[in-house]
Amino acid sequence: MNIGIIGAGKVGVSLGKYLKENNIQISGLYDINSDDAAFAAQFTQTDCFSDLEELVNVSDTLFITTTDGAIGKVWDCIKNLSVKNKIVCHFSGALSSDVFTDSQGSGVSVCSLHPMLAFSDKLSSYKSIGNTFFVIEGNTDAVSTLKALFENLGNTVCRIDKSKKSLYHAAASVLSNDVTALLDLGYCLLEKCGFTREEALSATKNLVLGNVQSVVENGCTKALTGPVERCDCQTVKNHLDSLEGEEKLIHLLLSKRLLLLAKEKNKSRDYSELEEFLSHGLC
Image 1 (cartoon, rainbow, N blue to C red):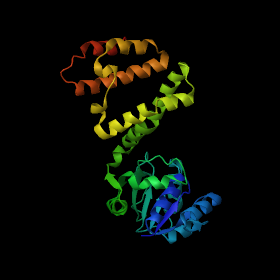
Image 2: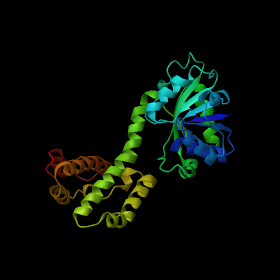
Image 3: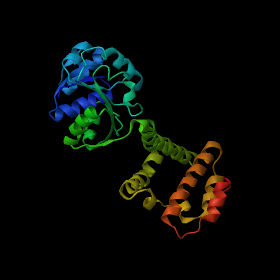
Image 4: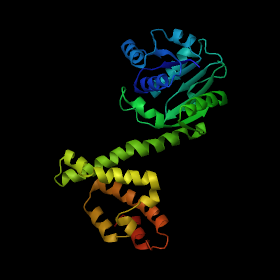
């Protein structure tokens, strides 16, 4: 296998570095921004290509690691080149392999492979890929080859149906971006109590990390604590009374979700009063 990487952003650089350090052959990197391509090649200790067709010619596998909006454009550029019998893979979490239109006519085996990892830093994110879970979908040959490649490196790779790709990415977004937004809401509420943002971050570190660790290790139901789980109606009411507008609505909706978990955790506990309050938005 000789992998050519198209796109020298965080994902392309991180994957290139990860694969290179694991002795996987990288033919080189290409980016429309020549400076980015040169930096990526130097960092990953691979070759830099200024001509896309040249990279395609020397690679049997092509990783498209551009932004989602550019994937289709890259495919339009390469599908009429010498890609027959090659593998073409993109790394978008939101798009499926359907973005590779008429791939069968081009004689290409296509797939999408998405790592469940936030690539936050071009220089260090590669260090986390070894423990990263991947989701893959696409043509059987491409899926089989790349699944084996990453599993041999120690990664877990799960195949899903391409029709579920958007739902999968929504789930990943909830678990990542939406959690960030929810944390920001909590920090803002503490700021209203007189905390600085720095104090709020420091004060809640053990609370936030401990809860996430408990969820990951034990599951959401077993990790659940708090006034909803205890069926403490008055405390839940006091919380909602202290909030207004969007903040109140968010807390109400999350409390309803927590109630479902609480009823699963404590099957013999009577939550009817709390359920009635929440169903009318009164508690």
